[in-house]
Image (cartoon, rainbow, N blue to C red):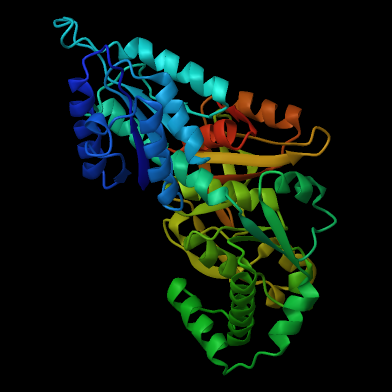
Amino acid sequence: MTFGVVVGNRGFFPDHLAKTGREEILAVLEAAGARAIALTPEESKYGAVETYDESLHCAELFKKHADEIDGIIVTLPNFGEERGIVDAIRLSGLKVPVLVQATPDRAENMTIAVRRDSFCGKMSACNNMMQYGIAYSLTTLHTEAVTSPEFKADLEWFSAVCRVVKGLKNLKIGALGARPTAFNTVRYSERILETSGISVETLDLSEVFGRIAKLKDNDDLTQAKLTAIKKYVSTHGIPEDALLKMAKLGAVIDGWMKQTHCTISAVQCWTSMEEFFGVVPCTIMSMMSENLIPSACEVDVPGTLSMYMLALASGTPSALLDWNNNYGSDPNKCVCFHCSNLPKHFFADVRMDYQEIIAGTVGKLNTFGTCVGRVKAGVMSYARFSTDDRRGVVRGYTGPGKFTDDPLETFGGAGVAEIPQLQKLLKYICREGFEHHVAANFSDVSKAVHEAAVRYMGWESHYHPELED
């Protein structure tokens, strides 16, 4: 991560605190493995920002590194000059997340020589950011030392926010195939997504099948993908001709994604793929999701977007699941399931098999390619964002939970999820008309996803069960 750092200073407060404050934040960022872009003491007094000239210098520095800076950290070792801070950010032209941190005073030493007043200065800085239209985030505590455990956690959270915001900028999503008629639930608006700078590139399944027809079994692309499939998952008992079909499908999708500069994808499955090509795309999609290139079924474009937000925040693979079954009589547990295309990261153990649901309609031989197994236990975050066409907005929900090791005998890719106040969440999903698909990730990043969505994307986000602040 690379952060632009603005060190606040105000002349009639102890300005030696700006010097030590700058040194402390730079040391903390270096220890966290982050890079800092900040004025030097040769470029401004103590490398801080107070005057308009210093704001100009800081803005020019940020402009030079605009393509590198993921977010801005405003640190207030004393009250800080609010105009200098906001002018530096505005003049830089950067539209990145901003974190405002204020260093606490020591109750046992509040003399004129060392009193900071950053407690008060933070309010003034935030007030000016509001006036200037600059979106900003706050630390957990109103004042916290940059060397504290609280700031360490806040820095990790803010880094996740920055990754989400940066990853969604100019995002291109590949939609392969048409939405299946039976899945009205995943309808969405490309135009609404476009207002957030997110574009959708389409490819008809006939074009996919046409490109596959041009590939030979012994082509380098086909064989390379076939090798990758066999390394990725156990294929014992799967017919070789089915594996070759999967390999060609994967090669075509990889090539098209690269050609069109699409980062993530959503693919038509039920039941055109099986009837007219003879395999399910699950393993190919699983492999993409495992490599942090989420892929959702049934052309659920908002679903793969939700997967990607979680993956950006955590740096680990996401899956798309159904909120599928109750789990006995426990009101806070449910079964999450898919056929499945879950990434290998989600399983305690995984193997390739056939799609048992569709097989009854199109025949077993046409449904090989699922990745099946039990979802492992662990802390998780979930998210679902969609377009609300009537109101012209992107809206969604997110929150924390966990997958458990409760006993479960079923097929596909499935696990038992435990969600605090699950019944309240289910009522919210139904009353607000959200889809049955939900993205999940083995991490605790729901607060970062919520912050990125609300504060910087301008989307509506419901946090479940509720935020403390």
